[in-house]
Length: 103
Image 1 (tube, rainbow, N blue to C red):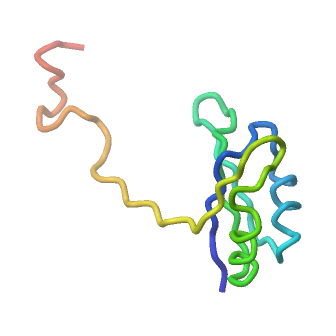
Image 2: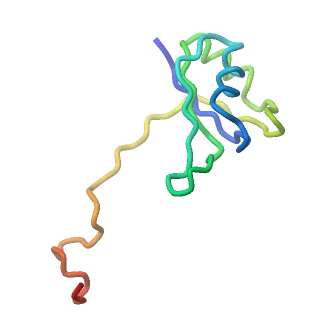
C-alpha cells in the first residue's frame, strides 16, 4: 500500500530528481509529480510524492517544516481532489445566443 503526499513551498528551481533524492532517504519513492502552470509551463511551487505507507509517514515527520534549497517545506497527506462540476461553455441555457450578440 502507498500514500501520496502533498509537498508545498518548493523552490521554483527544484527538479523531480531533487525531490526524489530528498524523499528517497526515507524509503522507496513510487512517483514524483511537480505541478506547473498550464499556460506558462513554469513551476507552481508544489507537487506530490507517492511512497510506501511507512516511508510516507517517516518523510512527513522528518521533512515538514524543514529547509530545502532556502524554502521551508510543507509536507502532509494529499487529499483527493473534489470532482469538478458541469461542463464547459459558461453560457448557461442560452444555447449559443451569447447575450443577444451575433458572432
